[in-house]
Image (cartoon, rainbow, N blue to C red; front, side, top):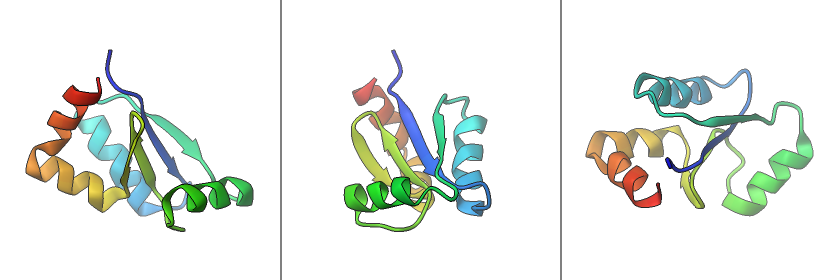
Length: 87
């Protein structure tokens, strides 16, 4: 079973779209949680990550960060390894 991947983002965020596109191109399933206009959800993300920006991405129970962090994992080949380990 593949790990659960969750992206928290907003409708108007280009980085959120880029993270989605990367996973879609790789045919990796994910759940998208839209936090647009949801102050409580944004505060919860900040409490969990210490960041106010979106997207915030989890693979399994591991928080990996934002879009650039996801791209770095992809470029280094670590994304595939992480998906195997958590799947």
